[in-house]
Image (cartoon, rainbow, N blue to C red; front, side):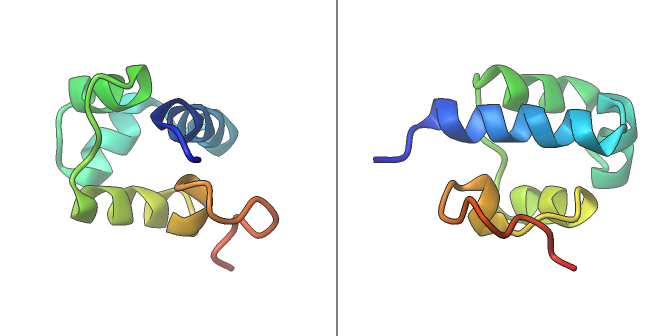
Length: 76
């Protein structure tokens, strides 16, 4: 069973790998920096459209972030 903690850990890892700051990501998504912090802390989940756009910004497949596929994480 997939847990919110697993999703949160992947999100944290991929943001670190991207080299982008929370502010960079928030600006690209047109949301507040605090929203990114909430996602990373696991306080809230992004809306589906925000999650899809976040994955696009991080060049990830949504199924990877959602722990559906551990092998193939990049979209390209």
